[in-house]
Length: 220
Image 1 (cartoon, rainbow, N blue to C red):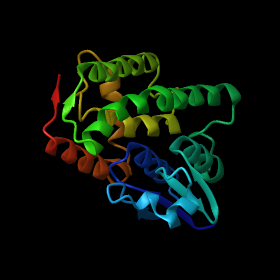
Image 2 (cartoon, rainbow, N blue to C red; image 1 turned 30 degrees about the horizontal axis):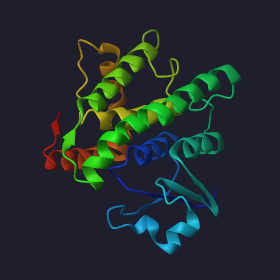
Image 3 (tube, rainbow, N blue to C red; image 1 turned 60 degrees about the vertical axis):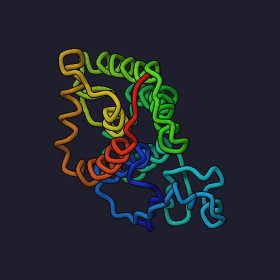
């Protein structure tokens, strides 16, 4: 196996989804922090690796790929001992892919509209409509979990790993109401029991949550 290097920052949910996938696959890798606040992602040496200057970015022995969804599908396909994380069965994979597209097109943008102004524009007033959008996501995930133990069926897949990172991040702004979203709350508790959760997601999530709290935001 070639050398795997992941470029990221702990507070990022997409980065943490890749750390979770690497943990699930139990493959060795090097992790290099890229400080967005210091604009290290805009330095020429990083732009050579990823001209879109986004995190996470993966270097697999010279093969460079970015976007967490693409990275996790690649890692699971190449390094998975089984196809459980990213099924080869076309119908099962289609469900996983649908969940991934929902994450990239709806969930991540919804969270970003809250986080970006707060962190990078120091705008501490969050419109209630943006929090309501997170609540709507919780409702959709509750439906996904209605008849299944996991996001895309009854087995852990990369879809779960993406949503573990994303939804745990969203709870910094809107806690999950156990009465309203019992399936979602139980699923997230189950995720916390994964042996690699604390290192891959818990540590970075705490850094993110601490930074959010330091902003003293208000919902208007």
